[in-house]
Each structure stands twice: as C-alpha cells, then as structure tokens.
Length: 249
Ligand code: APR
Image (cartoon, rainbow, N blue to C red; front, side, top):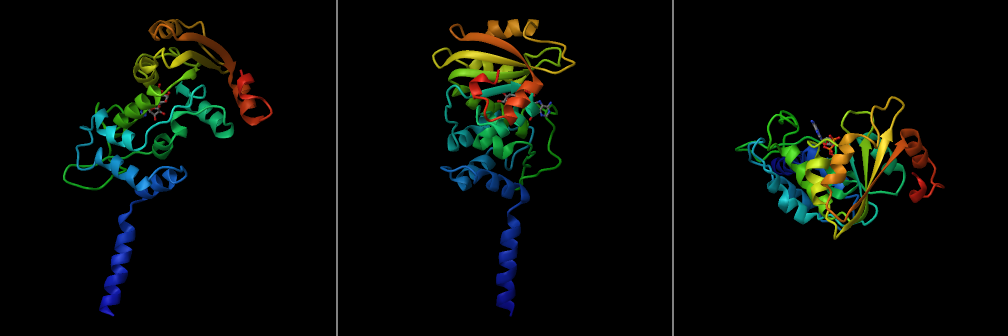
C-alpha cells in the first residue's frame, strides 16, 4: 500500500510540476509542425530562469531564436504599430499576410506575462515587471528580440499597418520604428507599403509628417508607398474570401 501511495503521489507530483504556463506554451507550440517543442521550451526558459526579471537583456533570447528560427515569407510579411486588433482580426480570417504573432514564437507568447527569480527555477506569471518598469525586463526583451529576428527575414513587398487615429502613426519609440524598420535592407526588401488604417474619427493619414520620417529612414533602394484604407474595408476583405488578397486595398 505504501509503495502504491508513493507511486501515485510521485505521478501526481510529476503532473503538477508542469505549470499552467508551460502547458499553454507547449499546447500552442504543438500546433506548428517541424519544431521540437520541448527543445523550444528549454531554450526559452534558459533566457530568464534564475535571473532578476529586470536583468534579462535582449541577447538572452538568442538561443531561443536559434531553436525556432523565422522562415522568410516573401511578399506576405505584415508589420504593424498600434493596430494590433485590426491586423490580427484580419490575419485570423484570411491567409493573406503573416505577422509575428502568426509565427511559432509570436503565437506561443502572445498575451502572456512571465519572469523568473534569482535563486529559483520557476516561471512566474504574476509579480513580473511591467513593460516600462525597467529596460531589460523579461517580456520586453523577448518582443524586441523576436521583432528583430522577424524583420531580419523580411523580403519582397513588405506591408505595415499604421494607425490613423493617433497623432504620430510612425512613432520613433515604437518597436516598428526602432527595431524593425532599421533592419529592412534593400537587397532583400523591394517595397515598404504602408496601410494607414482610417476610422471615422481619424486625425492623421498618409500625409502625416511622421510618414515623411519613415520614408527618409528606410534604406535607399527600398521604395515606399502609403495608402489610406478604411477600417471597414479591411474588415470587409477579412470576411469575404472571394476578394483576392492583392485587391483588398
Ligand atoms: N506595455 C505593454 N506592452 C507593450 C507596450 C507597453 N507600454 N508597448 C508595446 N507593447 C507590446 C504589446 O504586446 C503590444 O501589443 O508590444 C506590442 C506592440 O506595441 P505597439 O506600440 O502597438 O506597436 P510597436 O511598438 O510598433 O510594435 C509592433 O513589433 O511586435 C512587433 O512585428 C510586430 O510590427 C509589429 C511591431
């Protein structure tokens, strides 16, 4: 009886060892073929486990990126800034574009919070520093590293959805402006096509001065275009598969 109890408690203990966070990570990961999710999980954990959550530099995630590299998807890559819901509302329904959050690493970690702690091998999901609490925090460093790697493989026609309902659609402090745009190189990227999402109460559009900064900051040789597109047109294209991707806007 004692032996049986020990075996049962060992099994139960073993099962509870896998946290809800790890289970979410693995189940999201397993939707993608061709990746060893256990290996990806191990590479992920080494970035932050047993560390002060404010002392996780961007490079800590290099082994994770190496374990789950981004594949170039020329002419289909979609970047965005302050348009998360519109973009993903669209990419969820139509297979026209691929965002970072449609890739393995982006989709596995989208919406999650995690951090480690010095002297512990656990992954915490509460009590972690917020985005701007300290520079080198666990979550922020991941998104910067992943965004850089995603931008590094950008090729052909690249699309970016910017928000026409804010003052500065191309904001120099955004990840799009500070991490992604500088990595678009003319030998790989032909055009950068901005889709300016226009809502009824928009305050800016493609003529906004910040877009001039964008045009000037891209690598010479990459051509630039910008098109004002209503949010309702983007939603229409999302819900009508008979509209070809290239004629959405
Ligand atoms: N607090 C929490 N999360 C933040 C914050 C913040 N202050 N700022 C950015 N983020 C995270 C969130 O996950 C948010 O959804 O970054 C995401 C994008 O932030 P935005 O300010 O909307 O845009 P941007 O900084 O330009 O980043 C988007 O980077 O994620 C990549 O490829 C993606 O092109 C996209 C770009």
